Image 1 (cartoon, helix red, strand yellow):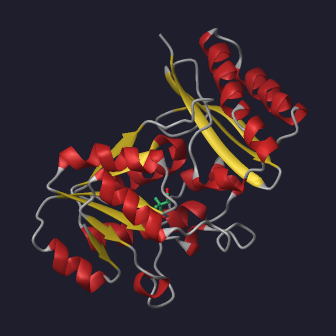
Image 2 (image 1 turned 45 degrees about the horizontal axis):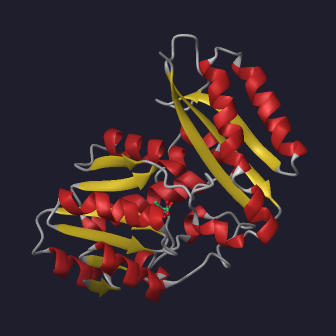
Length: 276
Ligand code: PAF
């Protein structure tokens, strides 16, 4: 496995690889990322993982500075999972000059996570488009834990006619249901014990959607349930999968999404619901 830090060296290395599949990450890799690498492997001769903490997608009061950076351990995990190339650029490599051209995911950046984190999806779409131009993969994998990110990037590729297949992967969870996330490392012992409740509340909401209850009521009561347990919920919403807009009676493929703070840590999760 090659660990590469510059765009020039990456292009040189990938010249011999007409066919590569890409797993973009911000590092601090856990089993969710490794699952993406494993799913990527059989799809191409060369599996490329990028590790880059992208300042552009963090708000001024967010956790860019304390985001865990564990490059050496990440490389070991990539090697064991069978990655061929790790691309770990520094900021000057990705942003050699101020980024004045950006990708605006217009409608989607104002709902859910986009409403709470202004500019977040602009930062994600912009860096992912740059990384796509550097790696030139034929396919890229994204975990469904970041459901809105997956939808934004799927739409970006479609609307900008990029010749890249976007492959979503199921969320990997701890045995108690907590979705794996690099931010779980911020949780104290008691917060870690409480954290699986986010998934538990979503699963109860999902059962109520399947039972035909009104979405507004489910959203309100699930939100209140989290608050009563000491969380600060940012949103809990039943949406349609296609564009994350509120579902109508005709929509059958839904997703229940939530973001909530537990102490200083912001966690997100979601569960899909397919109505019969
Ligand atoms: O999901 C992530 O880790 C990041 O948002 C991504 C896609 C690597 C872009 O920085």
